[in-house]
Image 1: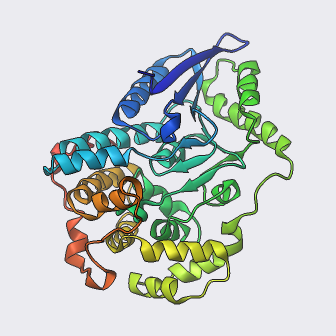
Image 2: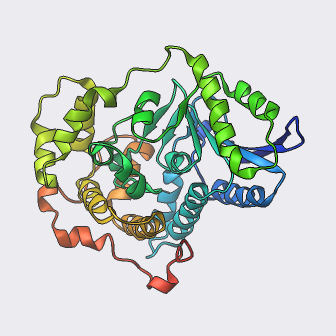
Image 3: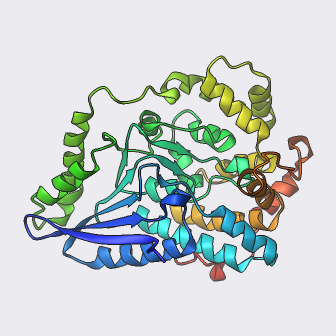
Length: 372
């Protein structure tokens, strides 16, 4: 069996080391399994404590994807074969995944994510919290959970709040894709480098003078990335977000989900990006839309730890209802793209929405109680 995560260390010119972790499941677009999550979390912990490691690089094998999300097809198999509540496999997967995401957000060393190619769902959970997030002209970012009857998790309830002009809500409701230019505007990337610049990045990291002041190292990495970014020239793709940001604000700023849904369903969009987004909303899970709306209302003033604890309860409850297994079936298993959602938007009341937030644990027993 291949190693699902590869680990390497490079020695710098001044005797320090650069650590590299590579998600190694190229055929599945580096989709995250529980094994991958556990291996990566354990090694990041070791590297963070190792004074000889000055920076960490996280990337995906191959050219097509950094990480296309979590292994939801494998999770669905567990849910169907063992319909327990709370499902132990779902609890283990999401607890470990959110713990890893939290570690990345709080990491005490420069952590560079090379977000080339597809970055979706759980992949964005890994990228969003890194200190230095690198996109390329080939980057395609999305949180398309509404298409499989889930919601934007992996900290989405926290980082979607930090986007301009209700863009986070728009992405949650439509799963609209973002390119590298969009990612800069949406605060999901810090630098855009040429698609083939990864070897040059490693060379620059090895050649740098890291010194003994750990506090100066994040700025050193930023300077190196800025220098490499200058070599990109005019290759930055045109931004769909920049062109449509005011339109997105007007679509989303309507006070309630029914009004937003009416605007998305009834407007004849000339812009193809907006038109495709509206189509995704119409075909997505109405429950996902309603819960996503409520999530962003409830999480406005939450800390990251509070948001992840809320998300764990949400994810377990989504796993216990029918839309998520059905959405994965329709998109990834049978691939008929004809999900049979449990409810239409007009049939969803507040009691149904609120039930998704009910925690199966007492506060002291919550699996993420240790996050501060």
